[in-house]
Image (tube, rainbow, N blue to C red; front, side, top):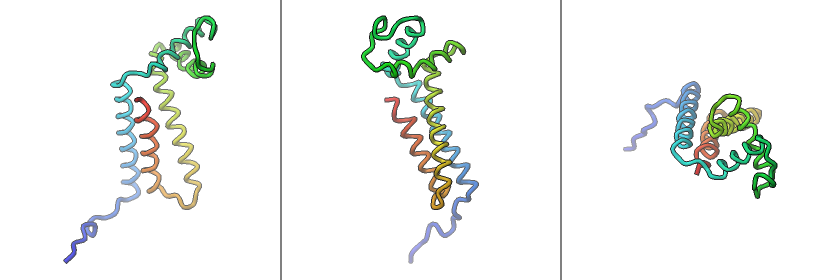
Length: 142
C-alpha cells in the first residue's frame, strides 16, 4: 500500500506564492542589513571613503592623497560622500543604501526582461530572484 502525501494538500495558489515570495525577500533583506552592521566594514571601502573626503576637501588624488587604485575607485564613492554631507548621515550607511538600491534596481530590470519571455512563469521567478538577492546582498560583506 502506498500513501500519497501530496494528495490532500492543494498546490500553493498564485496569491499565496506572491505573498510568500515577498515575505522571503523581506526576510533576506533583514538578514543582509543585520550582517552589514554585525560584520566589520571592508578596509578598502573605509579607505576609499576617506580618500574621497580628502579629494572633496581640496586634496589632489595621487599627490595629496596617496592611492594606488585607478581614479574611478575613489570617484565611485563621491556620490555617497556628498549625500552624507547633505543629510548628516554616516557615509557608510549611505554606501549600504546605494548598494541595496542598485541590487533592487538590477533585480527589477531582470524581472521586467524575464516577464517578456513567453516560457518564463512567476513560479520560477521568485526562487531565482531570492537566490540572486542572496548572492548580491548576503555573500559580499565578507
